[in-house]
Image (cartoon, rainbow over all chains, first blue to last red):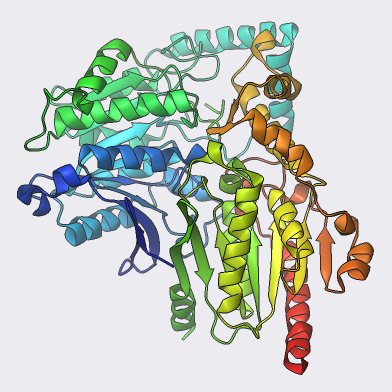
Length: 335
Length: 275
């Protein structure tokens, strides 16, 4: 059995009290062969965290594709399984979602960042997280000086119920199927909207205050953050569903003047971001954002077909307003 | 002491890449010193791999804890394995299984090798067993053919898709199947299913002798166990909620199956030693 093949290498992180399994995608030779990059002087890596209980390849192996494309751009990429997930040691707790929402994976994720930065001679790391993974990434960034940026997909800032009562699930399903159900669902949304208006700017009762504080800390300090949002259930384009609190609008206000937050709406994706069109759009957004914030030395911006050029075209075409996060697996309609 | 033992056990899980035609299979070997037997796990298909990953890993660890060495892997073109999914055929996946089992067996030929398949993996494992591979066979919810496995995957995906759709925008599973049968590829949870894959799946069948344990025992003269999994076993089977069910305690399922494997391995060892 081989531990390295072409563009991928397997690695184990130990010394964190638990063995973590990961996959390393070395930066494309074009860049990694340059002396300044070998030394890692200006080179950053990108670390992918699990989305809830999914293994590190993620839905539709999207994380594999994104990591490959990031490595092609010249940034080494790493995908790890957090403790108890994927091929890493340990056993995940049945209250995994609560642990994620409380930031319990932050210390192990930040320790992993430090180890990888040391081992691969990097200048720092951008942490990538999707859904629950983005919550862990955000918490980790606050306690990790080596974290130089965040890529967050469909981050949620509320505390979702672990699972909804079966009756409610069936009711929702019926509402989606039938016209009467749709009418009632819309009426319910309007009632919630009225309540939202009456409450003014007050946060919903199930807001994850700890996470919002964390966001405020890192965003106001000027950490580059790319926030990608997929259309939510009954969302009105990039705006949230009627009656739902607009967390994106709220966190942008919290971020302050120094913030470097980019919000992109990925219309072609669903929450999993696993579909090809959605995956490709995410890939373009990431490339554009990396190039604009962490440009590698000698990166030829004017080269024909250079990634930066392609992604910038894409970026200007798709930059839109923000929408509310949705979460198919873990936070569905539970706000 | 307990921590030391745990740590030793953990170090014995080794991930690696196994070269096959034009690609590399991602494998994890749950290595055991002086194993009682070996089990090659042939897992669920495509997106089902992700949904059932945790219980599948726990199952491998549960076996290794009882001195059964385990090799699990990702199909070519899926997960951590390389290769282009849409170019794969069932025959490719069959060849991979053959190569892997040969390698696994060669680690020490006197140790019995069992195959264990789930879903599409059960069809692959069943066919390999039918061709003479393995000293025993464990099947969890074997479908009669690969098409049934694809349908189960499709149904789960359609269920998730419908969460985002209302009224007329909602497509049923039969709508998608019609598209496939009319020659259009279909993207299911990030994997592009070709019409060819769909058509071939009807003909990629479980061997007839594996319809029941009794017939299998008479036909193969090697132990076969067939377990039909119920909805309680989600996400190993269709049903339940992705992201939560995979954290359930499956010891009620694992323990009796592990005992059966240990018994088969023990009997096969005696037979191999005698021979």
